[in-house]
Image 1 (cartoon, each protein chain N blue to C red):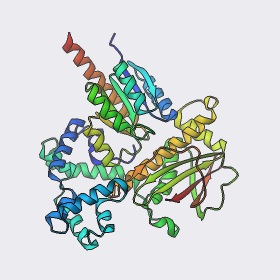
Image 2: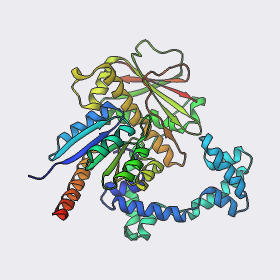
Image 3: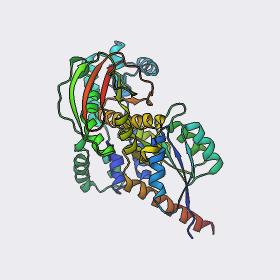
Image 4: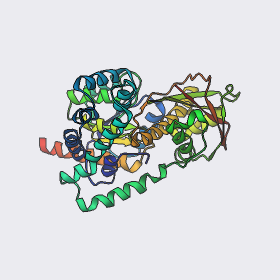
Length: 277
Length: 134
């Protein structure tokens, strides 16, 4: 259940176990060259320049390639060339498992098809996003996956409405929880709702009786749902090659700018507020 | 009677702890020996109670799950640790967990069958190692 990488899918399907995946990862570490090494091999960068980018990465959320271009140590077309070279010689986990004899090579195609079918439910169609959000692919996933996860986690039907520029926090915002998704371009995702919606969601998420839910537990339940939603949205983007880092929920979210995504919910009132950082 | 397997739950969310407590409570032969909300507490309780299995969140404030995983495995390599995370689909995080010695990475929302299968495999391993000690 949820977005998963191929190795995890194989473990969950009983095809391999964790020790096989660990062995495959070790093989991949040995064989797959990092981008900096490829850049050196192709004569685009020198060792000291790669070291400079690696050092700078400690202070930046950018990937090695994007950072090298920003630091003017690599041209954009050179980055494209080394990314292509890296993907062409990259040993993927499925092939690594085949090479180690943990998966039959003839079955790999079948297993990959099964994986694609399993993960197809997390594909997102194109929705119209305002200009400021359009460049944040993760926001598309957050908005599209929201109704699916509401149904799956809480058995609650939700429809996504209009996306408008954030004006001020609506009166119903009794519960405000946000989760930061750190990436090259960060996105703060806040779920705001009234107590009716919050209690229904927390009850469904925790399995606890509604009368056992105090205010902290309601906020925690809303935060956990948001964490699951953003984690899966972020994982989907990470699978496309854009690394993300998810922060823990903030239960005192300050709402000051961004976009409000209207939500039509069966119980109470709720909305998403997305802002960039 | 078969001895119970001892499980430690670690997640900053009370909701998740309640969820896991409910799921594991429905399984036979499982004893929950602690529920902690951060990595530092997990290390302390793991050292004291030496559970058979730890279910631990990756993203937590303070000391995160991967750092706690690294420390606990270095102190007690025999403890099986399954990481629990909404970002389990991010290969970088999941692969790091396996590299550090996690026996499983469970995604959220939870898949009950996977949790049952995990508990069953830990039970089998515990039975085998107890038999080997006799």
